[in-house]
Length: 366
Image 1: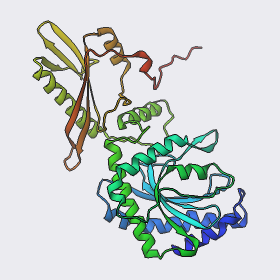
Image 2 (image 1 turned 135 degrees about the vertical axis):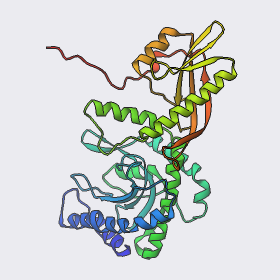
Image 3 (image 1 turned 180 degrees about the vertical axis):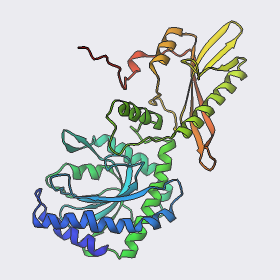
Image 4 (image 1 turned 90 degrees about the horizontal axis):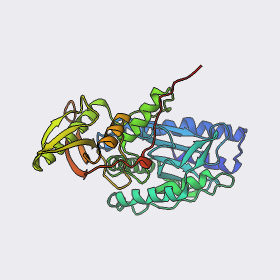
């Protein structure tokens, strides 16, 4: 691997957006040779990290169409980071001047817009990188040789700046002092163990700007029904996990209401609300939502049209119970759920401006 990194770096000063002989050789090195070396390390990575990640993959790119000034090769979870624009991963980034290469713990720093990759807003990248460094602080302390700032020296492309802004931490290797293959392999395994920790943390304490898994799944399903399924984007939760989360949320909401003196009936299977709660003359229509993530004032829930219509109509006899931080146990089949923190809104008045339509039914006329 040491020689492969060296060969790529020596070609970097000859960068051209067209597929010149130098760029053709660089492409083979990045997409085939470097990526194959990364794939050969995947068994060692899988042995070193918890079982929660079981779909490690590797890929490399030197540009989509035009040749990139900053080629890369990455290791990632195929489900949690299906493309380099999504999620978190560990990636080799080759400096434009050919003087250094970084092994970076990176986030999706670009967006595909108008037929090209464009940088995400700098403030968003900085905020997410800072969140990750704070969340991983204890694990990162053991490697004082990690750097927080990287300098790729891109001359023509804004993507280099986006990678710099999106970096969490990185190992920096200079062309004159590239480490041995054993050191490179050990550094890769270390960063992948940190990456697996980040994947686990991001399930409970969402990174800034990330939607909850339930919201992502609803968007994916809406696009699938509309015939516009996202490439590489699958559901974050399977049916058994969703059922376990929903059941745990309903159970905790029921316990809360019973403790308040209500008689409670679960009507979620037949009505447009989940719990029918009565106490004397009082009658409440209770909506229950469960999530594995931490609840914040910016958190979102998914509502059907019928749920919205009912709760608008029945206000102020309405209540919303959100159960956050539910813990899934995958050692059982089907998975079970435990824990949970309640947030109760009563009466619950839906603020129409806060509703975002995700899909429409449309009658096509003649």
